Length: 191
View 1 (cartoon, rainbow, N blue to C red):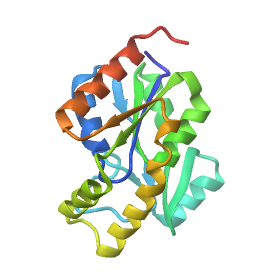
View 2 (cartoon, rainbow, N blue to C red):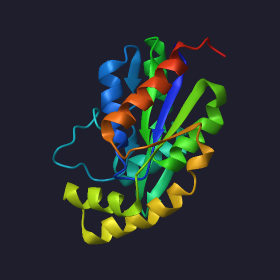
View 3 (cartoon, helix red, strand yellow):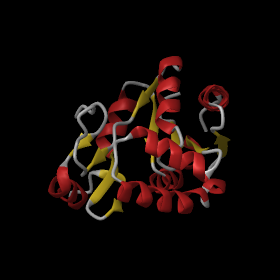
View 4 (spheres, rainbow, N blue to C red):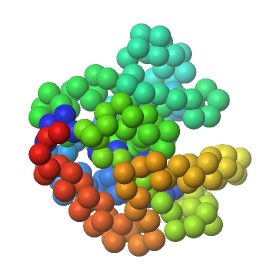
């Protein structure tokens, strides 16, 4: 199972984080890759558990030092990326890595790791359902919600580039489907 990656990607608000948490609870040998970000830490988040909060300058410094497997500037001065040392830390324990990652980042990882990676796209039932979920969070301004909806339209067009697409119309059904796909992948012989 080691040296495998499970990539869960979706537009913001599609339910990927909830699905990843469910997978982590029920899948031994699967460990979460903590992403790095330049954005501000929310009051409910913990550095080194939810993200590595590097700040803009710290993130740019890590880019210069080539410390990332992949990174992107999602919004102006809002960077996200996967640190090489984070994936190596998990693999050294003999675990498979699971990512809760945006669509571009997920596709970048899939291109790099090919058959060692299973890339699953979580699709919301509709754009209006996605917008409703974002508004229910009450964590972002109207401007940020509009930016996320605009970005989601672009991300939805890339779903077919993933190995699997799971529609999150009913969370329990979506979780079961993703668990089934992940178990089959992890139990398959190493390529």
